[in-house]
Image (cartoon, rainbow, N blue to C red; front, side):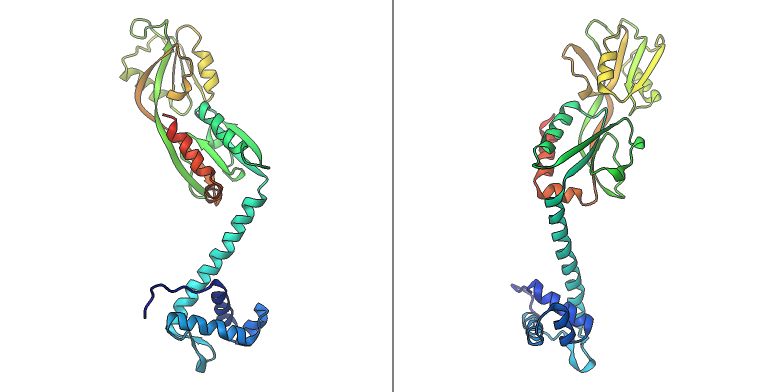
Length: 283
């Protein structure tokens, strides 16, 4: 059986599926609002295309081996065809995107991401910030930007790019001559891990009397203005040019989660590619 350079029209597959279901040209014709000769003609065109019979007429429209294989693919094709138009309809009728963004996510990229969504015509945005993923219900969102990779059970999660955590301090402090007495760190890290990172970099914490955990990049930068304070946070959280940064061995990832079907939807309107470009450019 040759298979090259041959195609079967979708409408012929729909007709075949209905004949197989009703086991009758007449019943299939009625369900499709067609004439019986037209149904017969569709089946004949399929058989001519594949070069084999698909029904055993003597057995009351039983399927041949070729017919059984064809029916399996016909059902899959019709299912995909229906899904295609449902997805296209969603794109045309969507009125709002629900987006959640972690407080500690890169603020510069947050602004650019929001701008890309705002550029979509006639679409509202509902943006929620959160400190930890445990405080949000992912079922309420279309897109979530976070430092943690979310479960793919009800959607798809992707890593956008990686950076590192840094130890930051003001220029007026020499960490190897002065002892910090206050440490502010991103809540994506545990206190124990922060202590290990400081130890790795030979920073003496014997005189630290206060350990502050927060998800707010704004608060971390504000706290760093206090004398004797150091900060352990993602590299992108340090925005003041006069703050010094010491890279650590700890990596931090920026991740995005799309609800089921959302990844394909954004891909179709070109937004997914634009978001990927944003994160590729930001190094």
